Length: 208
Image 1 (spheres, helix red, strand yellow):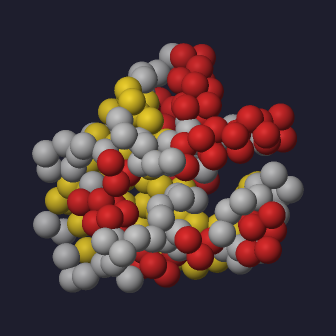
Image 2: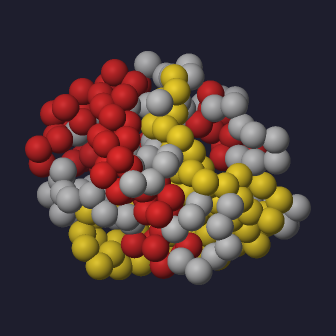
Image 3: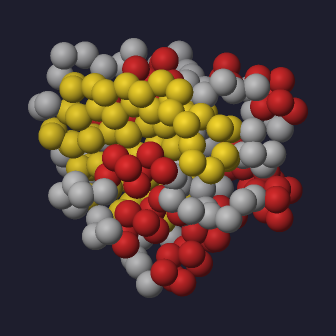
């Protein structure tokens, strides 16, 4: 596991994982990853906000060369253990996307499920998200639909602080081929209380 500069949110996310670890559902790859990525030619992949690693482990099992980042060391420890049990290799990095040193040319696949990408005056997260995708590469971003703002705030998460689905969609210009699927039903609800039954999905392929 590699450490790079991380935001002060790191301690906060560690505390959240400690607090809710025994309530988290069984870890399985997100359905949008499975449906959108199955059958694609493999290459380099970046999993942003990988959490406990279910998507990264699944991608590595499909043959992708996966780098997975998260600000929580607690989450990454569990993710690395899951990769070990699955017998796959993933490069785990404790970092915000904004602080990550991107490889020349970016990644062939970038996935971000329910990402905690912060708004900032400099739009650092937005720039880093677009820059992370290689020409010809695919960006897949999934957010929970119909977020209960008050419930989120009780868990210490104010959605207004973060890039949401519409913010991401607004980033794309003519250099991207964009497919948007609003309000996609999840086969299995997500969240501590199984409150997330639908997702908002955007897939965008960089033309150049």
